[in-house]
Length: 172
Image 1 (cartoon, rainbow, N blue to C red):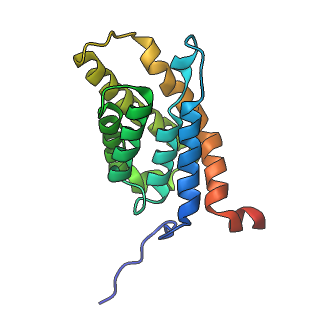
Image 2 (image 1 turned 120 degrees about the vertical axis):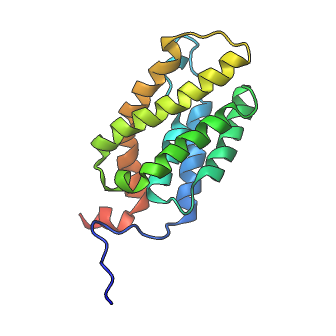
């Protein structure tokens, strides 16, 4: 009995851990940069974007557990309700894991539209939790970061793709 061979590109099983950890650390540092209060609502969630990238290309290393802990870290540094970002990150990663194999085969410009949907999931969950906790709702201010995050996806994808596969980047 012969088994059918999978179609499409194969996913490498493992990449260097320092590249993943370093990119998450840099993304976390970008989240901590001081922004003017007038422009903070435009800041994309860099840590979530990098986490989503690694969930697409390394689901065995970065998954829902990592998203939970990274979300708790964001909760601690932002001073938000403990668990707000943790739950939102975990739900976004859960939805992405349902689409992961499809996203792996999409070019980055097509991935950007799906990333916008995942950022919307994260923002809706964060807004719901904050609203139930008594925070005021500022309508469009909460959702402007979805657009800037989707726009940041392609340059972020190019940068992380070159870090992830340095051998093929040098050969081209």
